[in-house]
Length: 268
Length: 279
Image (cartoon, chains in turn yellow, brown):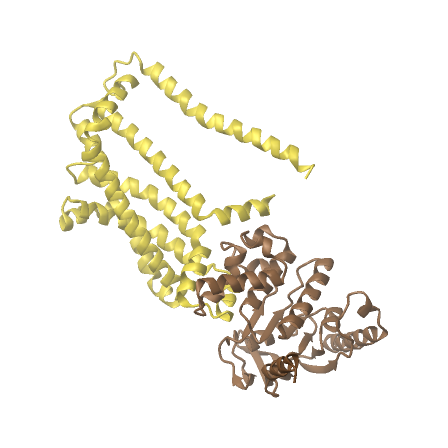
């Protein structure tokens, strides 16, 4: 223990330094942007101060309820459907290898079609309402969750399976307390890539087929040469993406606290 | 009769068990398909284990000891022959058996606390929540792990993890305990401690234990009877009654001349087998 103490202290100061850098880099970037764009007369790159004024006028708070909230609601609904369907189907396919083999080519084909490519068809079939966006997000995000769940379920340690059968553990506990948690690190990794796909799909679907939403506002600002408003929307997207990722990381570190603890232990 | 006599009598009656062996294995064979070939691993094993007996199966690595144990546990269907537990044929894991696996780090669920690992099998038995917790507490206490119950298994040492696995088996209240090389992955001192733990637990709970090991000293030290497996495909080479006094003691028992004799005898049988295999 005496030997390890200095190591720990160094790693703590190291972590503080990293935290400082994490804050410093964006701060410097923003300051640079602010200063360098301050006297800009370019139509396409207005000063950051102008963009921030638009940001405040548009997104705080006049369009928050009419555009941000619907975007987030649709994203949440589509992502929830994809997560549920991906996990349920993934568990089934992971546990039934012959069924998984049978549907594998179909899954590969459907996964290869990008969600946004289906937008024209979705517009025809479902119109421009939230149903279209939710379906498109669910379609676009289900694949990484589904495939990672299948992998995770197939990767469950056979010793754990032996324990489950020799102790006659009932079906619901096998699914929810053994297979699901065993596969959860991979499922969560799939959900993480699904989330970034989901953000892309929602913005794109709003740009093409919508009368509200963040994507719609960005594109209509561009159409009316309100360039500062357009940039303000893009800034908002950056901030939202960052916050969503942060929230997801919080969820992940809660769900997988055992996994992280175990890995840290084996690494030390 | 005094009150004490009545109590003793009723205890004897309660303990009176049917006389047939708890486990009867008859002419069990198991072959694995390797490519187009059928490779026999177990060739006609017959073995009986009596109620309350501690039997060690010892044999060289790769002799199919674990395969035999898995057939007994109902995890593997034998190619032919039968396994009877309490005269009932085994086709799936029976509720009266608990298994302790070799690799504790893989047999415990890393996402569940120690207590929840012990409770997990009990949930399927229709006990109330309180009953589940009570049983888990009791069996963790029996292996000296009360303090660790809220920790994750991977936060514990290897020996402690295997004690969690033993506690899980005890809470299950099996009539027979199957152990597959349970102490093979821990250091020598921990191993000795775990050997004594399992002897004391067995004495306290009056369980039948069938333990597979490749360690000759361990088999002689623990068992009432040692079954030596040898040959290819593997059969029962010899059954040796261990007439060493109980309770056993890591130092005194192992100093007995009889201990050395028995261990030498088992070693000779296994050596012969290795020579035969090499030829």
